[in-house]
Image (cartoon, rainbow, N blue to C red; front, side):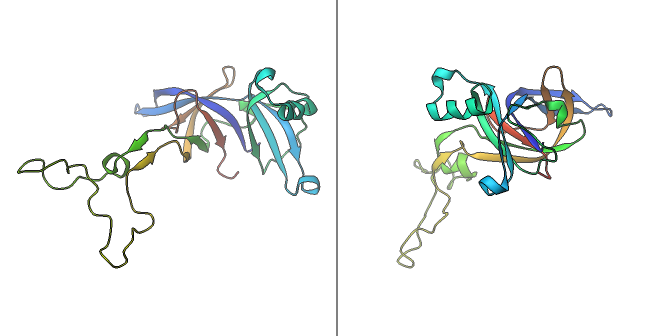
Length: 209
C-alpha cells in the first residue's frame, strides 16, 4: 500500500545520533480498513479505498451506510483512495502502519492548513508596509498601496496580491523523513512540521505513490 490515513497528534523533538535536536511531528496513522477495491474493468481505473476512524451509524447517511455494509466494515470517519498498490486487497482487510512504513523512509504528507480568516497583505503576503510610521503618517503603514494601472489597462490584474482569506487550504509537505515507527501505539514520528491543527486528518503517502 502506498499510503495510509491518520491524524496529527502534535509536535515534539528528538535527538539524532550526532546529538542534534530535531523538530518532529507525531502522527497517529492507521490502522485503516479496505472499504472498496476499484478495478479498470468496472470503474475505469484501479485503486484501493481505505477508511480511518470509527463513526456512529446515526451520523452516517443511508448511502454511505450501505457502502460500508457492502464492504462488511463499520462506518468510518474518513475515506481516501490510493493507487499504485503492489498486492491484492479485499474489502474488510486491515492495513497497519508496520505494513507500509519503515524508519528512514521519506514520505509526503497531505493536510489542510490552519484557517486564519480574513487577513491583510502584511500578514498574508509579507508586505513591508508603506512609508514610515512617523512624520505625519496616517493609517497607511499596513496598507497595500496602489492596485490599479491608470486608464490603461483600466483594471486590476488577475492574481494581484491583496487582502483576503488565508489558510484553510490543501497543503502537501514533501520528503519528510520518518524518524521512528511505533507499531504498538500506531504512531509515526516524522521530521519537520505537518499542516493542520492537532487532531487534523492527514494522508501519508510514499513519494513514488
